[in-house]
Image (cartoon, rainbow, N blue to C red; front, side):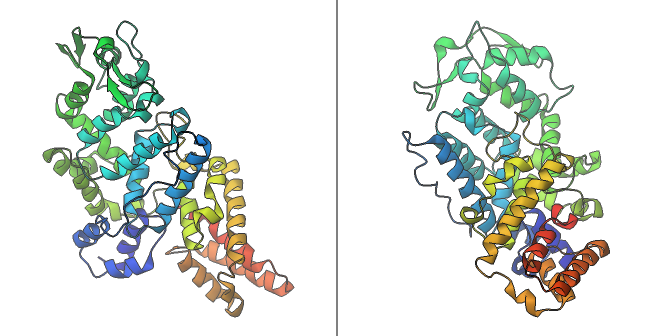
Amino acid sequence: MDRADAEHLVRRTGFGIDWALVDQLTPMSRADAVATLMDFSSNPTPQPPAGIFDEEGSKWRQVADLKVWWMERMRLMPRPLQEKLTFFWHGHFATNADTHRYAWQTWQENNLFRGMLFGSFRDLAQAMSVTPSMLLYLDNYRNKAGNPNENFARELLELHLLGPGEHHSENDIIETARAWTGHHLSDGLKNYQYNSYWHDHRNKTIFGITKNWDGPQVIDEAVYGVHRIASARYIATELWSFLAYPNPSSSVIDDITADYLNNNLNLGLLVRSVLMHDEFYSTQARTGLVRSPVEWAVACARAGASPASECRPDWWIRDMGQNLLHPPNPSGWKQNAEWISATGAWARADFASHLVWKMSQRDHLEEIYDLSVPAVVDLLRGWFSLNTLTTTTRRALEDYLYAERATEEWPQYRNVLTLVMLSPEMQLA
């Protein structure tokens, strides 16, 4: 693959560009480069934040520590695709830490995603459906025969398995809720526990099939049965939209679902198909995504060599519009235009200023005082993983530096770094 393709591949599978990794991948074939990025053996085994299992401790503090821990892992992993995909599933099977009884349940969910990234989608959906985090978030632990709660059933079909539209009816949701009765939590709301006493053992009609359905059977029927192709295309579209660009053509989805459908819904093959597809390297794909606040903050912290515990992006991302571990609703976060707002821009500027202050305390990049203005812009372009700058952005940065140097005042170092972080190019994923 050529260097531009390698840069794009590394950028989309991580948080910023690791130039050494680009150098490593450039001589490789596309297949070998993708295989390298999908090999997580060099990533250390995740160890939960200290105190996460202390049920007497402050849940708020434990969840805050988990945010910092996760964003630091995003920043540091040699193969960050592991965290990128964990982040994707966090939005797809969205739950909110505020509804979890214990902070360790949030950690449990997070690490479940990480451990099932390249397994069967069916297995992931089954596992997530009975996590304490999901049972609490969508109230299925209250779902009882005679008084069914439809919250989980609705989101299971509309968001997790099939997508909104023609592939299920309102009656399917009602009957699926009955099928999931009795799938509850143990005393203390700690662990999953099936309670036959509260399960509706009567026949239900789901997807036109009448029988004594149990909840997990609905998942199997949706992904393996009558709606197998629709479910596969829905998941493929969601993943493509996250890694490439929204609203792909039907032909692209046809291509990337082929191996996935023929191999037990293997998510590793689906990821590989996305990253191998010619369209993934198109102009539309290279420019098709705006960085979410989490992606942008981690990329900035990575460029600034600033640990998350030092720069604390978790203090700003909520005002940018994305509170990690706290999705706004069961559908997770939207894309692109969702991240473009005056409030979000001010929050990004405030975080960038804070990050530069932390960097300046370590004299990070003080060498820019000894470089020419064009050389400074080139250094920052590479440092912030910006493979290209438009003529407009380059001229704005150079004009600022020339004007600032003429005054012989001190802010040029901090301000130019902030301006680069706020440039249009830095906002693109």
